[in-house]
Length: 298
Image 1: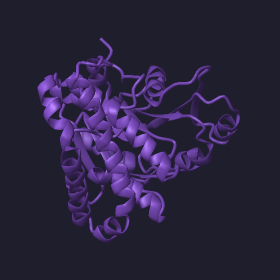
Image 2 (image 1 turned 90 degrees about the horizontal axis):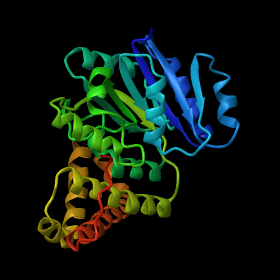
Image 3 (image 1 turned 30 degrees about the vertical axis):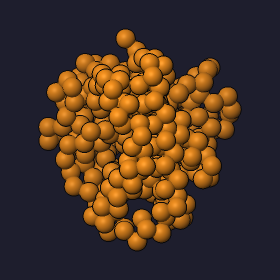
Image 4 (image 1 turned 90 degrees about the vertical axis):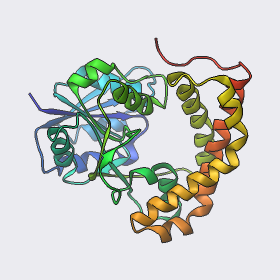
C-alpha cells in the first residue's frame, strides 16, 4: 500500500497534464500513487495517461467541478496521506519529500508554495494576483488558507473534516477553516514547491475573479456567521481593500526578492484585485439586503 495518494482533477487539461505527470515521476520520495480523475468528454487525456502506466485513471461520465473530482479521487485512494495538486502544476523534485517531512514533524494539514511556471509578463502578474501569499520565499508557519493545488491532509483528519464542498470553487478555503476549527492548524511549508501555469487573458482573469470572489464571500459569511450590519459596513470599502491587497502583495514580493516583477506587473494585478474586491462588495450588498442564501452542505 502506498503511503501517499496524489489526486489530480482534470478537465480539458491535456496541454499541461503531461508536464504535471513528468514532475511526479521525478520525485525524490517514491512511496506514493497517482490518481487522475477526468471529467471532460475527450480522449486526449486518456491517451496521455497511457504513457504513464503507474497512474490510476478514472473517467467521469459527467462534468465535475475540481473539488468534486478530488472527492472521487479520495474514494479511490489507498494512502494514509491525501495529497492534492492540479494538472497545470509541475512539482519540483523534492515536493513530496518536503510535504511528508512537514507532516511527520507534526503538521497533519500542510500546504506548500506556489511559483509561476513561466517568466512571461502576464503570467507573473496573474500569479502575484492569486498567490502572493504562497511564494516560496515566505517563512513557514500557520496559514489561514492552503491552496488545493499544493496541500496534504492526513487521512485521519480528512475523515473528521469530511470531503471538499464539491459544488463550490472555494472548497479549499472551507476545508482549511474546518481544519482550524477542529484543532488541526493549517501549516505552510515554503520548501514544498509546485510551479503553476497560467493561461487566459485579462478579460478571462477579470471574469474569473469577479465570479469566484462572490462565491468566496458568500461562504465566508455563512461559515463565520457574519451579521448583516457588518456586511453593510464593509461593502463600501472595496477601494480601500483593493489598495490594501495590492500593498500586501508588494510586501510579500519584497520579502521574496521579486519587488521589481511586482511593480512591472501592476496593471494585471490592479485588474485582478479590483474585480475580486468588487465581487466581494456585491456579495456583501446582497447579504446586507437580506437577499443572500446559504451555499454550504449541511
